[in-house]
Amino acid sequence: MKTTIPDTSVPCPRDKVNRKFRAPAPNMLWVSDFTYVSTWQGFVYVAFVIDTFANRIVGWKASQSAKTDFVLDALEQALYARRPAHQGGLIHHSDRGSQYVSIRYTERLGKAGIEPSVGSVGDAYDNALAETINGLYKTEVIRRRSSWKTMEQVELETLKWVDWFNNRRLLEPIGNIPPAEAEEAFYANLNTLDMVA
Image (cartoon, rainbow, N blue to C red; front, side, top):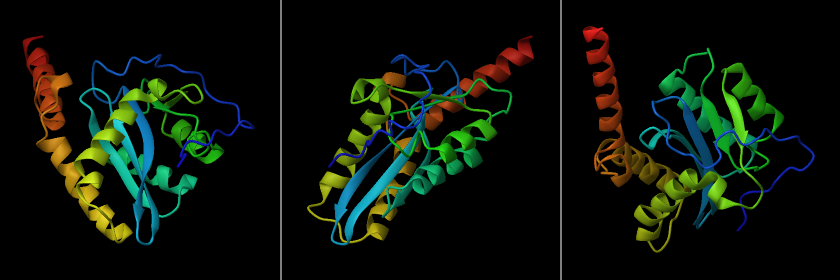
């Protein structure tokens, strides 16, 4: 199943990331993507918003519809959880899926003071970190069962996995610690530097 359906009628933002998916601090670069899960009731789409500093999942949403509303809900969750400063500096990167380049999504990014960035068409490397998180999710949650009955079942297991991923899963790219611990260490170091200065 193809989930990225480019909307060629809409002008796209340029790629501001250029495949550099590691930010030096939280709330500087978020990447977004979604995947799908086959259930007895039909497809369930699951969207993630990831802060690239420590690969922390800061927003997610499961839905039976792949329309713009569900990726907007994941973005709203990220905005509520992170409350990024409105002074700019945060980039949101996605593929060219019609949901992410829609007027409503782009307007919401603008209202939040977030710069949009979009990768090239048909190139998974241009959103590689989000694709990696989708792959981990599929391997660690979805493929462990032979079948899924309902969206609610997928949603509950996704909730559990996001909590585990953020707070207990050891990630090699950030020093074999969980994302939440990496962010805590970053802020503790900032506070120490502030006290010294």
